[in-house]
Amino acid sequence: MIAGFTGAELLHVAVATCVLNDLYREAEKLGIPLAGVRVRATGGFDTEWASTGIDYRVEVDSPADPASIARLVELVDELAEIPRAVRAGAPVRRR
Image 1 (cartoon, rainbow, N blue to C red):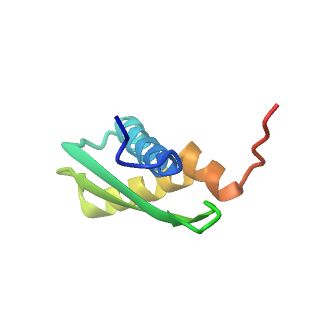
Image 2: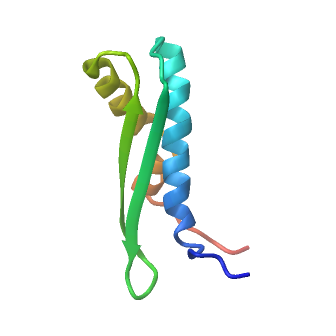
């Protein structure tokens, strides 16, 4: 069976999953109720498979006020480990 995506695209899934998990974790800490969250990550790769960047969008279903949700999303954008690691860049070595 052949997957409907490339291994490189798993990077997008990792970003989206990290943001999703962190939204729930931080919302609980802040006492913000979440009924549901959707995170969609997209991006591309050049002809050498270098990432051309990753964009993600967050949809939050919550009875909390929009300002609280906006602060939550901003906080998670700063804290989420995988997006931070991708933004910082890192060498990848085979040992």
